[in-house]
Image 1 (cartoon, rainbow, N blue to C red):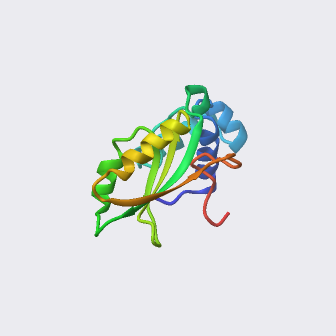
Image 2 (image 1 turned 60 degrees about the horizontal axis):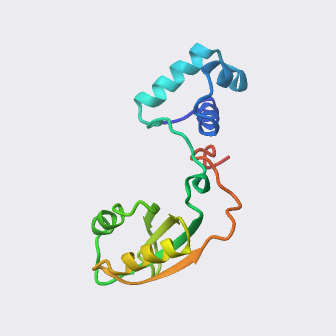
Length: 153
């Protein structure tokens, strides 16, 4: 589906605050509340909008430590095998197969360094993992909502 600039503007406003009213969004994008609602309904029906959620502050929930962990896999491990294994870890925020010598890149959150250490130990024990390499996040400098606008903007 092709998005026009109004759709992108509406998505941007929803990404900033999913609780914004149609009237509030309309005031920003120069549309009436019913026009915004029609567009949001269409974006939901076509699957562009998959749902609405809340963004929580991890540290307020006790998740104080953040890291990226690279997994080096033995043999030719399928992405399905990797996903099935790492989905069991609530500490995994995201998991992506990547190019280069690393096979899988994980973004993790843990309560503290000891908790992170235990998670990395468990990951190392997965049958397909030959080794890991971890990078601890000191400061998260830029975090953006899922919508930044079209790639050419």
